Image (cartoon, rainbow, N blue to C red; front, top):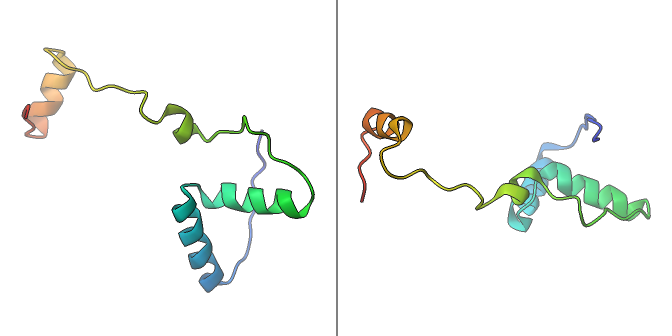
Length: 81
């Protein structure tokens, strides 16, 4: 279970930190957690995987005549290419 905290950070540092997190492919929260763990001498378990990482690439688009897919395609003017 995670705990929410509020941090007050200089805007320039915040912008740079978000850029670094994006380059590392992680969230700002995960980056801050990693940094705090390293300075406090704690290790983050490897099994701590972000939700998006866990499910990336697992979902498949429906195909065929699924009525929900047909309705969404017509609503958004999509066609099979």
